Length: 281
Image (cartoon, rainbow, N blue to C red; front, top):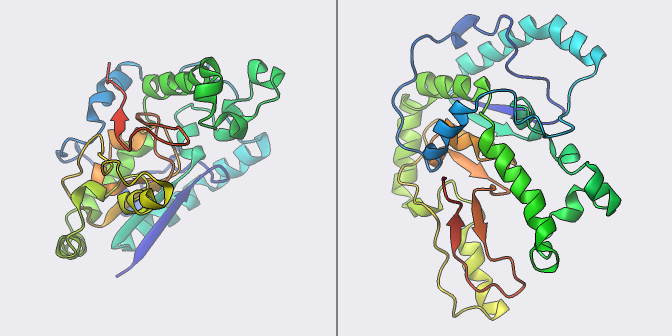
């Protein structure tokens, strides 16, 4: 069989241009098949009601230069046809997304999200702010930054590319013979369902507990359980907006940085290994 890797990040051109994107075997009609409830499905309604090009107040969203725009427009037909052929010939689709995928929804990328005057006056950049110690040392800065991100991610609807990929997955990768074989193999491996699609492996967290003096802490308890296993489609993302959960199944998603919907104790000596979900309202 064949595996198609689709990378979408800061340096990638927009994957979902409006021109001839419905060509070849990637043209699908009709509504997507009914999905099982995802881990964050309750958020979609609010985002649908606020659908648009982002929250407006988010500054610095990256955009291509005029020269890049011209090149993208000139090659959009050729690029879409190449992508359609690759998807049509693949048995498995692994979607790898970065900040550029969020930018298409109108959200700022990592380089820009903290580039505003209050942080500049303090000499802080994005990586400086992303330190758990701020929660203890200066909680107003911590919650000011992450609260802004949280609200923007919640109030911004995912762009139409998510739905397009979801249709591709339904049509070609979730119910195929290859998908059935992958699913059967994963079930045979008897992986704990709560670990599939989750942030850092529970085994890694527990393995380091004894050496850190936290062996008395209970095993980590996730905010939800993943009850299914993926087939021929999987998404790996560094984005923290949780937008993948609006369209893809929870078992199909791996977030290497987690997301702003999930919280845990950030103390040097954590009080708990529990992970909490932010309230939906």
